Length: 85
Image 1 (cartoon, rainbow, N blue to C red):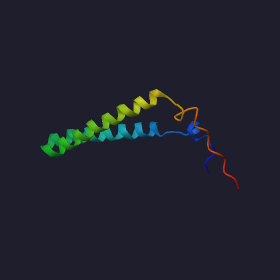
Image 2 (cartoon, rainbow, N blue to C red):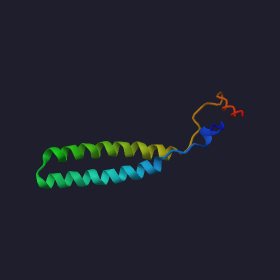
Image 3 (tube, one colour):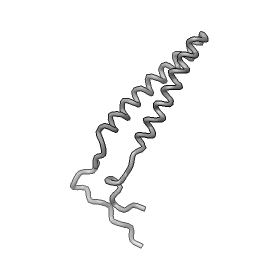
């Protein structure tokens, strides 16, 4: 049910996304090192590319976290009408 205060009270799962990204980065770097040590170059490159993608995602997540909460619609956008029963 919408109350009209969603833009002000909405919560983003950025911290969870940060933790999961760090966990994925750990596995991608570990996979890169393990595959490189065993001589599987293709898999090592694939894990390395995945690590680069994860790092780019983490940069964006940290940037959004540092921006802090902000109200997205402008002042000319009225809140939703409460549902009528």
